[in-house]
Image 1 (cartoon, helix red, strand yellow):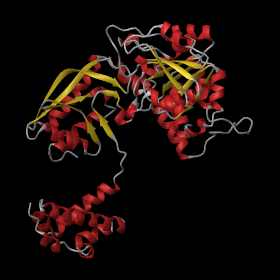
Image 2 (spheres, one colour):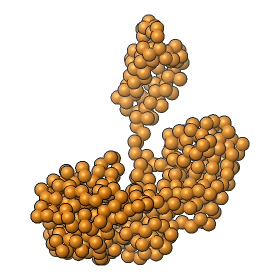
Image 3 (cartoon, rainbow, N blue to C red):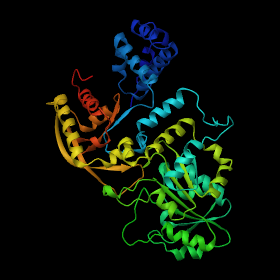
Image 4 (cartoon, rainbow, N blue to C red):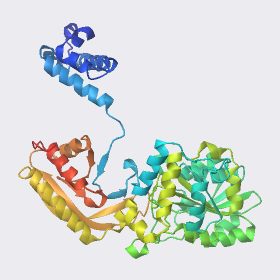
Length: 475
């Protein structure tokens, strides 16, 4: 490749660009430091283009068109000042979409966060006595009431909950766990790695597909501190299998004088069998089985904020509260507020099913989804008529978020097949819009699942699709 380095001399200086009328106008809208930074970035990009021999002449021709240059700088400035954390319309049908923030908070939790964030609160103050209190007091009684546990503690996520429990109860000693429960959680972190960080010593028993109570019994020795059960909430092993239950572990633990810990992961406190979903053990059932410690997430099936919730016997929880690690992984005031509000919804289960978005989305019936799809179908037909083929079709949604991996949620989808662009280009434009839109690309169509749309988002979604396809007046 031959590079014409003489073109480098044609690149103007930063000061010359800043004197252009259109750029001077931008300096009156944006901070001057950002304008200068944007100009330098663009000049660097053009310099790189010349050295790579790509689009150099076209780019340099723009210097004779100040308006075009100012528009390019304005685009760069907009990208700089635009928040990185932005609203996304979730049309994927994945209720607990990890990449999109998992559980959507219920209205009461949102209001509680607003209260906590906008002023002072009694986070660590007992208003009755006027003395220092605990930030966990707001949720401890609720967790005990709802789960039947003797005590509770909340940290910033479930991995931290497992880490804290193991560090407190088994540091320097062995923890026995089935080889079939060596799960990997988000971000490629694995149970053995969390256990190593806690200072506990892993003792694997059984095989990938089969583990028997006798396998645990043979492994128990004077170095054993804990029997661990990990609920495989993000995958299932089917076929020729055998996995030990919490009840069986509790029996073994009672005989050997060892506590049992159960990591439920997704952690539901509502029995969802009535929805025809696969069996998912509830926190209450696990406590009733005799587990000394149970850990689960706040932002999965519970439908609350990100949190790691620990419930169980008081003697174990009290020891965790004294562990210095507890302060390092503690929750902030906004998490406390959101979690308390979410838990209060569960005092009335019928209300919780309606008010908590996660539960409401999971429990939608097909007729309701078909009706909502019909509305979106009509909006899209009006918005992009002649530019895309719009159709209704049956489909499947997912719980997501590492919960209920074998659960298929039957429903209805709207299919958008663009006629004037590749479907990948449409998906890319929607993803980079404001608000961003996420759907599912399948062959030559974009599938939009209404299960995960919030109130009035169907109207916004139709406008976003029209704008992405170039329909004028779609703002």
